[in-house]
Amino acid sequence: MVSIKERLKNGIFTENAIFVQVLAMCPTLAVTTSAKNGIGMGLASTVVLMGSNFVVSLLRKFIPDKIRIPSFIVVIAGFVTLIQFLMEGFVPSLYKSLGLFIPLIVVNCVILGRAEAYASKNDPVSSIFDGLGQGIGFTLALGVIGIIREVLGTGKIFDFQVTPASYEPALIMILAPGAFFTVGILMALLNYSKLKKTGKGNKRISDFEGCAHCPNKSACSSIK
Image (cartoon, rainbow, N blue to C red; front, side, top):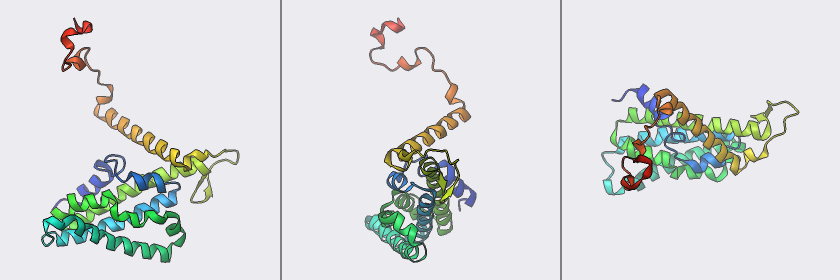
């Protein structure tokens, strides 16, 4: 059995669905207009991830290979329907705010991908924690993006004013362009941090190393 710590670390950092694998961009860009929306979508997806991973893992030896993907989708749809009813009953404002993106969790490539790549090949306990790790990573990413966009776009977090009264909100941050700006900048910063940590960010390519495989190198005057 794979260690729980490894599964959690893998989902949160090593294979973060948004910042590393660049998956689920549609809900990421659309629902993160506020911290509440981002965290709400992340938590809903986490429950579906854990539940569907567990059931898929339990049934992995009984599902025929030819119909495994439709079978996974049916399992995921069952959990999404349950989450949809619970959110409508207990958090109607969040349910209304997320709208169509709740049922679209059914076809979220992160959830279907974990069912296919991990849960269908591993034991139920490891699969649950794989779903938990992926869900936490997804929720943290959505939450951070939502907080940044909400603060810059409205000056608030969870409807509490956090900026000076003189601050002029940048409304573009809660519109579609703001989502692209935020995700792009965060990805760039994370990639730069990784390169600095490994030392590759400051590695200089030798003068002609980049030309080694060029088909025109023999005719290039710069290396003669």
